[in-house]
Image 1 (tube, chains in turn purple, brown):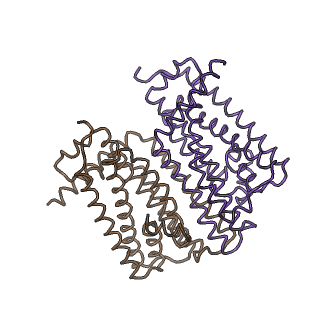
Image 2 (cartoon, rainbow over the protein chains, first blue to last red):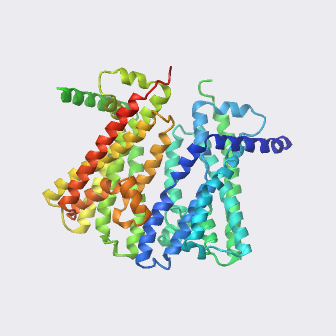
Image 3 (cartoon, helix red, strand yellow):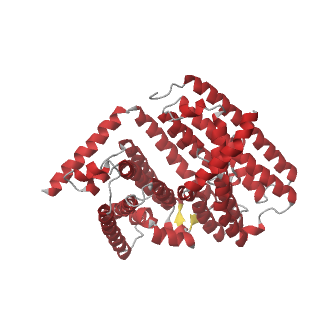
Length: 266
Length: 264
C-alpha cells in the first residue's frame, strides 16, 4: 500500500510526459468527439424555430457544450489499451511489476487530465460568450457539487473502461463489445439527447443504469436543471456509489481474468 | 483491354476478401445484429424530434427518413469497401510493406483501394435500402423511374466525393505517418450526414458545405429521389464530384513521389 502510494506520483508524471509527447494525436482524438457539436447544431436550429418542450436555444447550447467539456475531461482510452496489451501479450510485463496494474493505468490516464483540461478550456471560454452563460449555476453549493460530479464521473468512466478492458481476458473480440457499449452509453447517458427529452420508457431504463451518472447528471447539475442542492447531492452520492461498485467489479474481473490468462506468444 | 485487366483484378481481390470473411461465419450473425441495433439507434433522435414537430427546416419525417436511409447506405459502403482497404494501406506505409504494392504491375491507387473488403457490411446497405422503402411507404408515393435514376447517379457522385476525400487523407500518410486517427476524425464528422444539410446553419453550414461536402453525400441523392432537386444543382453535384476525384488523384500521385520506404 505504502509502496503504491509512493509510486503513484511518479506514474502520474510519466503519464503527463507521455500525453505531451503524443499531443498531436490526443488533439485529433479530442476532435473526434464531434457528436455533441453536431447535435448542438441540429437542436439550436430546431429551438430557434420554437422552444422544444421548455428547452430554448440557450439551454441546448449550455447542455451540449458542458457535455463536451465533461466528456473530454472524463474520457480515457484504457479499455483499448488493456485490450491491445492482452492481445499482444504486453500485459505480462505489467503483471511482473510489484504494484497492481490498475495503478499503472491510473497514472497514465490521470496524467493526461491536465492536457485535456487545457484542450477544453477554449470550449468553456466560448460558452461564457454565448447565451448559455445565463443558464450555468453560480452558487457555491452547486459549483462544489459540479466539481465533485466531474471527479466522480472520471472515476466511474475509468471503472467502466477497466471492466471493458478486462473482458479481453475472457473474449477474443472485446473491441466489438466496446462499440455496442458506446451505442448504449450514447443514449442512456444523455450524450446524444438530454435524458429529459427521451420517451418515458427509455428514461425509466436510464434511471437504473450507471451511464447517466457518467455524463447526463453532472451536466444537468451544471446547467441548473437540478435546482435543489439536496437533490444534486443525492445524484452525486449515487454516482460515487456506482464508481466504487464498478471499480470493485473491475478488480474482481481482472483477478479472475489473470488466472485464465496464458501469455500469447510467451 | 486495360479495363478488362482491372475488372479481373477487382474480381480477384473481392473474392479474396470474401473467402477470408467466409472463415468467420459467426461474424455474419454478429454483424447482422449490430447492423439492426445501429439502424434502430440512428432513428432515436429522429423519433424524439418528430414526436414534437411536424417539420424541421421544411423537412417532414418521411423526407428526413429518406436522408437517414442514404446515410445508412453510404456508411455501409464506407465501412465495407473504403475504410478497411485504406486502413490497411496506412499500416503498410508504416511497416514498409507498401514497397511490395508499388512493385506490382498495376496502379497502386487501384491496388490499395481494393485491398480489403468487409463483405458483412452489405447487411448495413440492405438495412438502409429497407429503411428507404419504409420511408417512401410512409410518404405514400414511390419515386418515378427518372427520379430513381437521378438518385442513383447522385449517390454515385456522393460516393466518389467520399472516396476522394478518404484517398487524400491516406495520401497525407506518406508525409505524416500516423494518420489513421484522421480517418476516425473524418468518420465522426461524416456522422452529421444523417441529417438533411439544410437543417444546419451558421458555422456548421460552412464546415459541412466547403470543408467536408456532406450535402453531396446524402442530402442531394435523397432530394433527387424525392424530386426536389433542380437540374442545375444536380449537374453542380456531378461537377463537384469530378473535381474532388481529379484533385484526389493529383494529391495521391504527388504523395507517391515523396514516398520513401520505411524499411530503408
